[in-house]
Length: 247
Image (cartoon, rainbow, N blue to C red; front, top):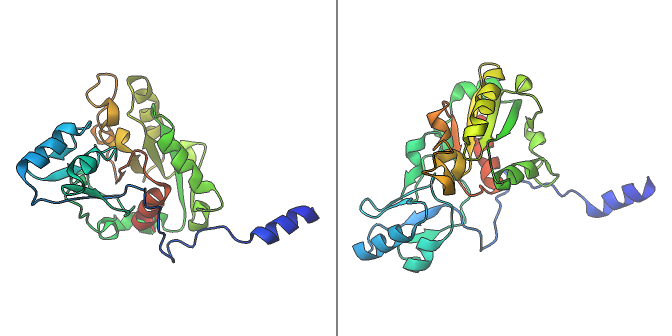
């Protein structure tokens, strides 16, 4: 017991002070992309042709965050002249249309549903559903329970049963075999309930987009309240979106 107390004293508090203190992520982190609309058409078209997710519209000079897997091809091809990835991890949106962007996203707090804040401001219980995910998004949600992020200090917890939940967090491309289980989990969650889509697979089908075996976007099945793009979204992206939208 004494050794445990000694170790705890030596380590001190390891919990992040976010959101009171801003977090600076490593330089290699690819956050919100910024699109330069003033580049030559051939450069924009080359980037669009190289995008594995067809996330770039060369004519409109926009990027679809819900499809983007943040591979960085467009930045490498254009040398950062057309698309440049920043370190901004604040990528959550309340409406799917906002995912199509040149780099500016609406203030999520302004678009948060205020009745949700009143209902769940002090306590938000979520049931996570992995609908055929690869475990990347799931892993970055799991780490929110570690001492560094300590999601519970904000009154947000993941629970084992949808009957104890205020909403569901869905990851993965929603395969044909998982569709029924997902819908049953949603129906088992008492109203009022929220639906959160996390990761490019849940938002658009991700790398599996176009397959007959998956659903291309959770919003085609359920009313989605919060979209969190990424492949996978960084834990700070998830944390920012949850706190901004519900707290």
